[in-house]
Amino acid sequence: RTRRQARMLELVRRMLPDLGEPLMLTLNRDVVCGRHKDGANTSDYSYILFFNDFDSNYTGGELVTEEPGGDRVLSEKNVWHRFCGRDHVHYNLPQTGTKYSIVAYSQSNAAAAKKGSTRRAAASAAQEHV
Image (cartoon, rainbow, N blue to C red; front, side, top):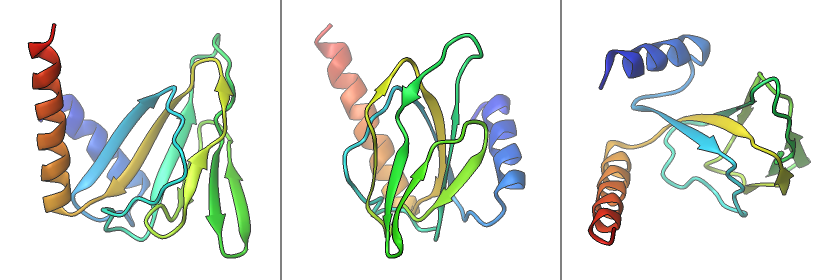
């Protein structure tokens, strides 16, 4: 890992101390996910933070979590939202404009390794077809 990545992980660990190891961060741009659960997550909770440039607004893209007490809609920008991605179905509503988000979670070492090898294989295959 680079020093910048290590620093980012340390800052997130301080902000979200209840996440386990290994801590995973996913940076998203314009991602709209269908209904799913995060089956490989090992922590009780995941966190998401929505943000964007001040001069570039977006609308929509909220994260809906289907919880026993009813659906919860997460949308406020620049705030860490806690949700149970492992146990509750969740998805994004449609959006317009450019939306960025960071998702923080922990995952088993085996799942993280598999995800990494799958991404490397996909990137390698994509390079071969260029």
